[in-house]
Image (cartoon, rainbow, N blue to C red; front, side, top):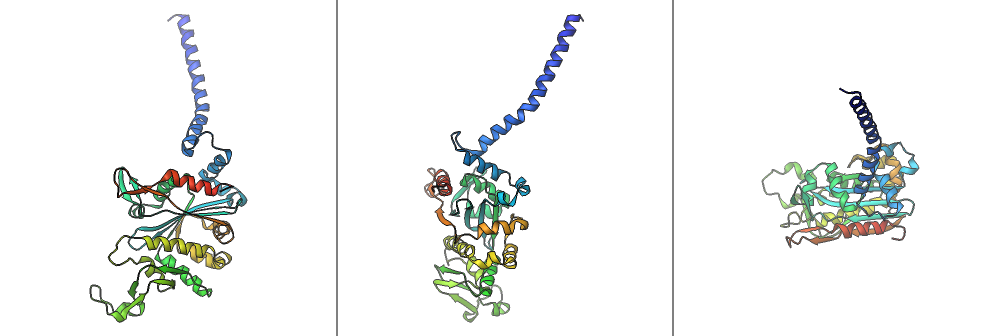
Length: 326
């Protein structure tokens, strides 16, 4: 092998080593640039406030190490209610912004269809059967950004809310749109499954305004209009109404024991160590400026009976509400 050829090979190896080193140092920055652009899903003309908002949200895990002042500037959460059948029958997106004192609630209809691996499925059934990470991953695109937290309520949650408010001498009420019938707990042990329940064992709640009690709250929430299965219009209304009343009630935010009781009655990824900090925002419904949105829907062009999310319009409404002039 000639000396010239040896020198050529040596030079080639050195150059390849330099290129490899440069690639290792540069590629992470390129990768970050690409993924930041893709995750935001926004045009490059988007202002800097959206960029800072995205950075704050995407660093949910690392944000635990930042100061409490930085962490409590904005709070975003999905409040879902799951009935005894395992369906998500109420879903509300909440965003609270401390700087502008804005409190945004957005009711997301549970009877819309979502895509599940190419198969359209009703939201209330699909999300009810999946885990909580799936819930956040599926709904965040409808909001237009990552949602940090979730709170999942059940019949027992409404029962706890009723107990807390009763103890404080107040009440939480709902407007029944149909008659609710359930077995009186005093006679529950006398009822044999499969047999006709005597009328005297039944408690009947008439249509109209009714105060939630420790006895009736879960029964009301889990009820269905007779002959109208899987219609959760009332539960959607109940979920939003109770949310507004609870988040306006001082006894929940001012008493740590009460707040802890409520916390223990829900399923959530909000760390208990952050509960006091975020509660100042969460329970600011009566003092901040309120904007309520019902998430817009359209019918799929391939099926006139299939209602789907009008996501572009929905994202626009939420962003406008959160904007300084919204």
